[in-house]
Amino acid sequence: RGSSMNILDDIERAIDDAVNTTKILCRDGRCVPGAGATEMELALRIQELGEATPGLEQYAIMKFAEALEVVPRTLSENCGLNATDTISALYSSHSSGRAASGVQIDGTDSIVDATEAEIYDNLVVKQSGLTLAGDAALTVLRVDQIIMAKQAGGPAPRAPGAPDM
Image (cartoon, rainbow, N blue to C red; front, top):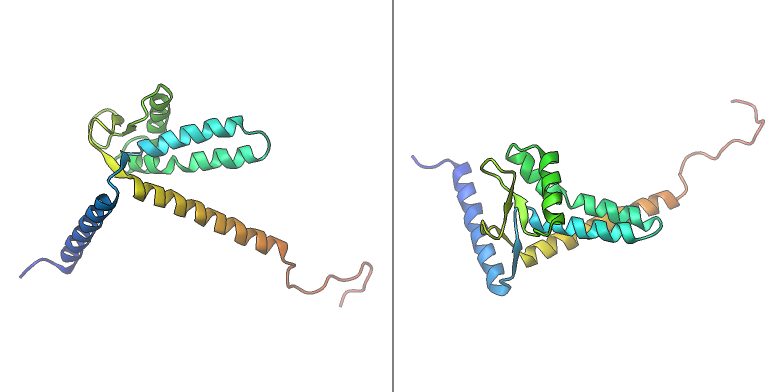
């Protein structure tokens, strides 16, 4: 008579996460505001860069900035908030200079100052995640380019005016 295997697995994962977090913080203790605040600030700054960039590159830069909204959008959806309203409030807050504004997951207000609430993410983890996401996107784009560059392996086209078989 004890805990089920699922509960034991959850406890093991929680302990493993705690040990890994402690290990990372001992190696590099730098942290950034959590609750989606870092992603929103990056999105805002990358959008500013995209608006200043001429040509087709502008669209890729703007889409990358939009992709960074996924973290605060997911946080707000998971806690039952209207994601569109939360993202708008975060953009407004970040535009007015409050770079640590993030998603409030409990309470009536949809945004919170992550540093005042002591919500932090490790810089190394955040940096690694963004680097891996960029690498994955580049890999997909490279594969698409290779597929589009290859000739299709279907039958040879018929000559114009050739009779049907």
